[in-house]
Length: 402
Image (tube, rainbow, N blue to C red; front, side, top):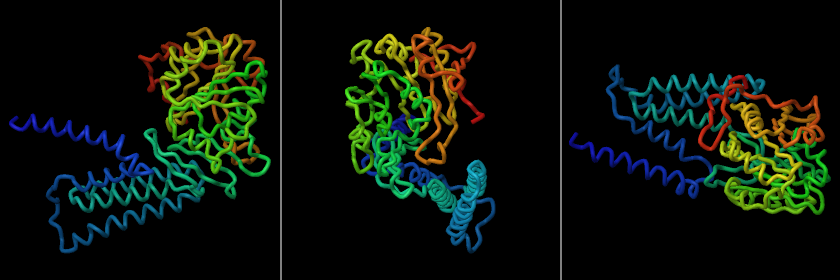
């Protein structure tokens, strides 16, 4: 108990310094998340020394170097071979390879150097497995993560990638620069809705989440669309003509309001927007505060009488359609949904599948722009309370079937 005060003081100081480093220093030093694997390897190297079960032999020092090297080489070769398999087989193959490597590394835990280098070898193999064939045009890190602009298909197809999520794409080949791509391609659920909406609805629109600005090319001359974007880095990339030209070339007029949409949208005029689109991702997760009872009440207050609210609910782990269905029922709004599983339409790599939920005050307004059978009434979660700013149930929304 003598050193208890100093112990807790040092623990608190370490946490504070670590937070400052991760939030402020690391984004300034690295254009990737390099601090995480570095910290992992250093932590493994700094484990307390433990006596080995078997006395070390004369070649123990050489084995401390050779075994991690062999482990890393074997895992890297496995990853390369797995790359020739089908996508689903690749996923399970990589899980097996890294699980096996982790099991082997744990057996070295009594020798710090051997264990630390083994962890480093696994980290390098993970980096190899995550490598893309696309050319990287730009990489930039902000407080919100690492953004990469990549080029594929001969350099004309540009994508904005944040973590595991594609935030938008553009085909810059001649004649296709103004064609919406990615989740917004003309055959997508949101593309169908925007193509059917009358111009009286889309004269003013609010888009939560800028991405590359793909959706802008559904606008018409004289229309003014406002993008709400929390990260200035995204706006800077979207406006750079070396990477994307939607905001420059599309026909409407566009404003970008920087900041959290929940804080900035209240400043807009009530009932001023005919269309509100919520498409803000934090890597592969929708920020919960944008799909709560209070958030929907805010959208309703800014929506015209016959306006439309659309939500991109694509997610690898969560089934968000029932969450929105419960919110719509709670607010007395009509709600329809569509899942688009296509990874590419007609073999075109610039298109991606996505899931959307669309709401309106009146069912007839939805039927005009989102007719059945392509669209279905939103599924709901019986017995589940609507999400609020004070309550959400991520475990209840977990979808293990994906």
